[in-house]
Length: 188
Image (cartoon, rainbow, N blue to C red; front, top):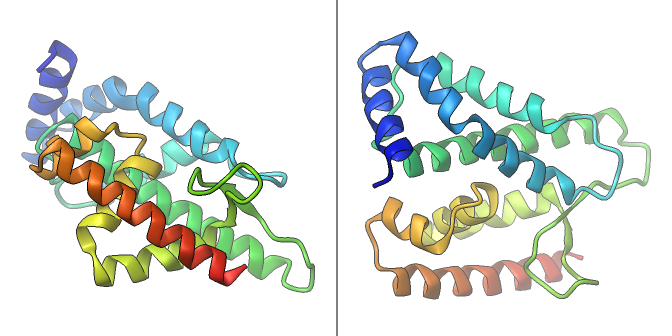
């Protein structure tokens, strides 16, 4: 474990015990990673976005801060938890936007990396619905997609966070991507 990861792990434990200064230091150490992840996710939007990476990360931190205890054992788990929260925030944001312009025929899409270049833009809400269905059938695969796609974690980091082998995570990642691609293609 590198020094920064070890520091984050120690600070997360202190934060979990109620130390707010540890919370602030932990956030400083992962802020750039989370902003990079948020930027990558938002870069795929094909329409004008009204949420910026910085705002998305700050909203995620606010939501984390409101939680009674942060249940993250290390940096990778914390990034995965933050990714889940950012996904929820993005979905909520898109639902709000869609409700505000229901009469319009515009749809907001997101680059997924699941299909070919011409076919890999999907509606974020459709992706969220498909992920929810996947979670009912194959919860581990849905968690892998969340960590990899929304969290920007590598196969190795995901395997570590889940306590699984790299080959198992890689196999489940491929299966989940294929299943999601078919689900999303059927909806278009």
